[in-house]
Length: 111
Image 1: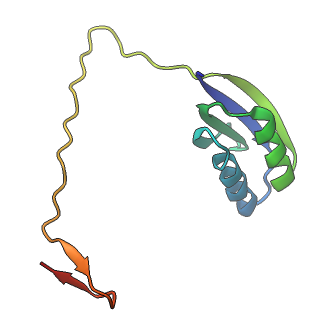
Image 2: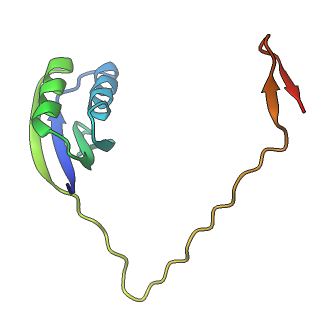
């Protein structure tokens, strides 16, 4: 399946409802990211794979209130400009200087 982007307009009158709406949106299987968009930050843009837009709207209606599906479509991927080369990122492994072990009482000790 291809990635899709769903934009949902939600009526949110308080900070508590905005947090609850975002929590509901992120809790659905297949969601990779969710963010507020729009001029009044009253729309939630959800991106991911295999997201059921009807299930998302139904759960938001039950949990928050009035919900309207604005758009459902594929994610537009940005392509780098021609001639611009990107260097690969090198990630070095992190080595912790101490190794902790715990005894039966829950106290750490070093080796």
